[in-house]
Image 1 (cartoon, rainbow, N blue to C red):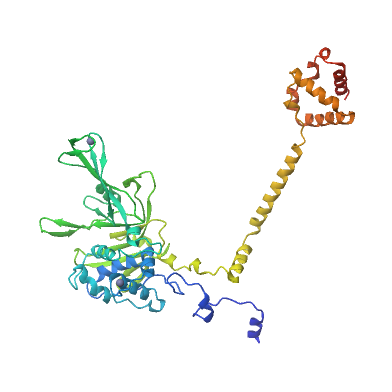
Image 2: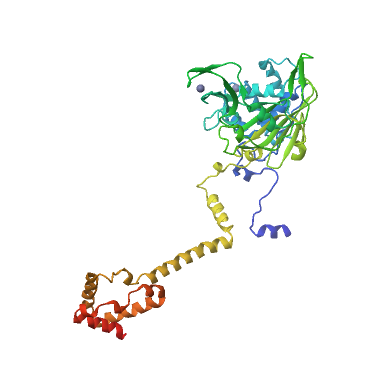
Amino acid sequence: MGATRATGKGKRKRKSGPISKNDAHRPTNFLGTMQAIPHGPGIANLGNSCFMAAALQCLFHTAPLLRAVRNYHCPCKSCWICTFKNYIDKAINPASKPKPFYPYDFYEKLKDFSFPPRTQQDSHDFMTQFLGKLGKVTTTEGKYVVANEFGGTLINQITCLVCGLISGDPEKMLHIALPLVNSHSIEESFNIFTQTEYLDSKSLCEFCQEQRYKTKSYIIGRTPNILVLQLLRYQYEKQTNGMVKLTHPVEYSSTIDISKFTRQANVKCEYEMYAMIVHEGSHLNSGHYIAYVRCSKEKWFCFNDSEVSAISEQEVLSKQPYVIFYAKESVALFSELMKPEPEVIDLDSKSEDQALLADLKKLKPKQKSKIIDLDRIIGSERKDQDLIKPKPEPEVIDLDSKSEDQALLADLKKLKPRQKSKIIDLDRIIGSERKDQDLIKPKPEIIDVDTVDSERKDQVEVIELD
Ligand SMILES: [Zn+2]
Ligand SMILES: [Zn+2]
């Protein structure tokens, strides 16, 4: 009984849960999945492969790259692009979410980078070479995605110390390697990186046409959408003739403004951190790599090989990064790719009309009344203007000029008695409204009665009588 009553109302509630027949018409997100996944899967360690997994996690969760690779068609099925695309297909499938991904295909291909098998490598080195392999991937708009998102330009400015001529061509860059020696913050590292150096020997200045002493300094030309900062933690040490890791803490924050290191120092150039690679251990070719990724506005995840766990931003910021990924505000986050795409909606379908109606219904009463009020105001303004309209213009008449007086008299002569009195009445009304102007108005006494003819005397009498 109860069940029939419930269905008898005719109201349909949206069901959540397993995909039903009706869901076939639901818009899918760009990945073609019905469900949004909060993050990609963990990546199993195949033996010293964490350097690769950490870099892959950061790049997989880089939304513009993920979107472009996913939509890119390569016929070969075995190149790095295809390998990454296969991974994306598996990673975004909600059904395979709980399982870690086994990166055998990637592992096999590492020989392309001349990495000896089963050895720990530099995660940033892998990432740079891997991005190089994705160079020809284009977006749906036909742009090379790696160059478009990660690419910026760096200018090595050479300045003549006599005339000040600045020369130097912009060079393409995909990341900035920041020195950590004598630096305790990203800002300090940027200052060191861009500081002016005096060149030891003279060189020809094209303006002076003489050999001149010059300085050089780095400045950022085109700023990338995604700014990758590699912190140079590995330093050559003479004593041991080997690399040593700089482990001192470096101050950094979740946002950065690099405008003062760019050509346009007065234009803000802000970024927000969305991923980070951390190296644990004291040596480059040992230890362990972990990735931290911000998949949505508020949610960070720690990717430690096959394990994925939620983590607070505060905790992320307590780590000492090796590579930091900053993105401009215009760059979408991973979660934003998971939203249904509006292009999928059929504009001709009735459901679209219904959606529009639903939106209109959502308008608050206040918003509606504002529209009406506006109409009212316009109406009242129009009425005011109507009242002002029939105003005669005595102020305009130059009463001092005789010719003007004569013209006025001529006009008055033509007027019938009734009309004359009307003018006077109107003048009175205006007079009471504008007393200030009355003070300016010339008084009738000014008129020299002797100089005007008898007809005019009559007119003056009419005015005085009233
Ligand atoms: Zn391919
Ligand atoms: Zn010069």
